[in-house]
Structure formats: structure tokens, C-alpha cells
Length: 277
Image 1 (cartoon, one colour):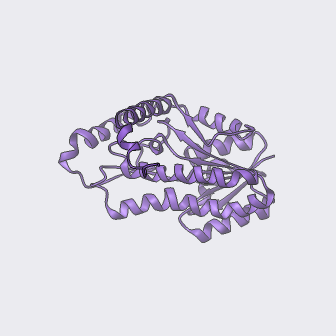
Image 2 (spheres, helix red, strand yellow):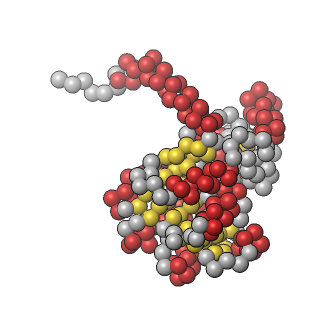
Image 3 (tube, rainbow, N blue to C red):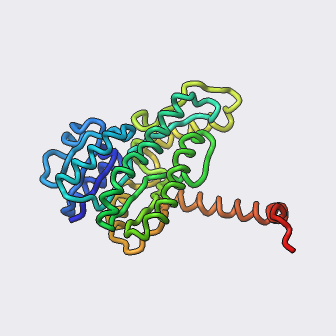
């Protein structure tokens, strides 16, 4: 039996993975700002511990982890799933909007990870899955601020991967593309209220596409949940796991673009070292 600690477990990917983990006999510490949402969704279960957790509150993260260890003795898998999006041009986003998305997507992930790590280090084992996005691998108009938070998650995950591997702890950043969840709904996606006309051909088009794409995304969230449940048994998990054909296509496109930049600008790029000899 594995012990999961899942943030944002009341809906979306978190809820789907909670359901599957319980079904296969694992235990789940399922966290949400309001733990009643957990109970209402999953009912009573001997292997389920609903816990109140606002990931932006460092002290709540410590308390939630203590409750998990008091109940189950350890945490085997941390799934950092809590987060939300912000759509709008970078210039359109207000300081408070930017701060809010960073507080949850970056600082919240850090709060929970730092609270869990002491127990994993003592056990010399554990797995950390950080939910990022294709937006964490390449930025795009309309999602600049959101993407920047996921770029931060990618960098943190790569560093944690190297820091924790010698201690028997595996870290992987998960990069979903567009999956048919409520991510593009108001419950998961904030939209900057200030609209600047000059961005109509870029961000404006993204707003239109997002509206038509909501609940028509190509990715099947049930299949993602299946993959991640099985992935926790992978003996040598990679530092990043792209999921979705759109993610694969976007990564391949960025690789080609970066290769073209290196080809065109290699001489300039190499010219800035000190002369040798």
C-alpha cells in the first residue's frame, strides 16, 4: 500500500487520481481548502484522510503533513496538483493577479514540498510529482504569467531531481497539454479584467479559442490518471513526463526552433568566451 499526499484533490486531476489510488488499495491524504469538499466527493473511506490545506499557508502545510504521518506513518508519493491559470497579456495582468497565481502555483508548491521532504529524507525513499503544463516548456501569448509560474516549477523540479536522487527520492515534473477538465472554466482560470486593444490579434484570439476549446480539449483526463498511477511504479522515472499529443508536438516544434537559433547564431554565441592561448 502506497501513501499518497495530494494537493487540490477535490476536483480535476487530483480527484481522478485520488479515486484510482483508493480503488487499488492505496491510502490518500486528500487536501483541499475546504475538506468537506473531499468528503462530499469521496464519502467515508478507511484509507482516505481529508485534510484542510491552503497551500499558500506555510503553517497549514506543516500541520497537514504532520496529520498525514500521524495517521499513516509516512508519505510515499507527493502529488503537487493545486494550481490555477491566468489568461491575459502580460501587460494586462495586475500586480495582485500576478501575485495570486505565483502564491499558489510556485510558493504553494514550495511550502508543501519543503514540509514533506524531511520525512522522505528520513525514509530515503519517496516520489514527488509536480504538475506543470506544456505552458511550462514553452510560453505563448495570453498565458505569459501563468507559463512563467510553470517555468518556475520546471526549474525547481529539475534541481530537486538532482538534489534528491542520491537520497532515493525521485522527482518528475508532469507536463499535460490540453485535457478535458475544468481548467478553462472560471473555477480554474482567472481572466485579466483589463483588455488592451493592441493585443486583439494575439491575446484576443487566444481568448476566443479558449472559450471554444473548453470541454473540447483533446486529452482524456481518465487516461492521464491511469498513466500517473502506473508511473509511480516505474523503476527509473524521467525528470519530465510530457502527456498529450499536443504537448509532444509543441516540444518537438520548440526543439526545432531552438536548433535553428543555434545554427544561425552559433558564431555570435561562441564569441563571448575569453580567448584561449
